[in-house]
Image 1 (spheres, protein in one colour):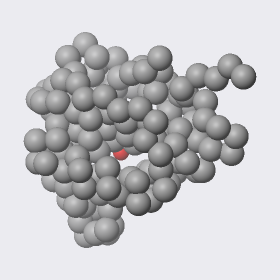
Image 2: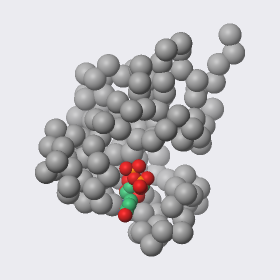
Image 3: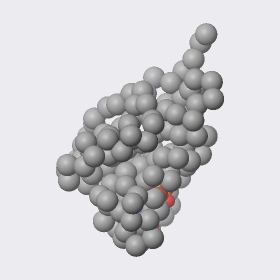
Length: 146
Ligand code: UDP
């Protein structure tokens, strides 16, 4: 049957995960991948890229009017990122649960076992990304992959 990368096998979901520049430069990619595989996700695609400003602006378009946007663009273009398509049942919510809250400094207190607590620093430099809904997962996967 015809399938696209944004469409998972029956009963599964796909989500987009990114190890952000602070995670890559901090040597966290292998520990993050280990957690991903031990948590039952299959890594369907992966790509290491140094994003340019235009790509980050388009990827985070929903935040374009926010005061933190210029800083976010600077951060996300500061070095290479590892982008992955993850698949399993309930992948979107389960990956969001694993990464923890957006603010890594708070995650260290409230979700000490989360990935952002492990390798993030603060509200901006939080080490990893995860799609937050079925719609954004589809959009984000097709943003980076065929
Ligand atoms: N971010 C920031 N300041 C804020 C909120 C978010 O710098 O006040 C950054 C942070 O890196 C976050 C990204 O912008 O991961 C996207 O924000 P979003 O609210 O979508 O959080 P996420 O879905 O990544 O948890």
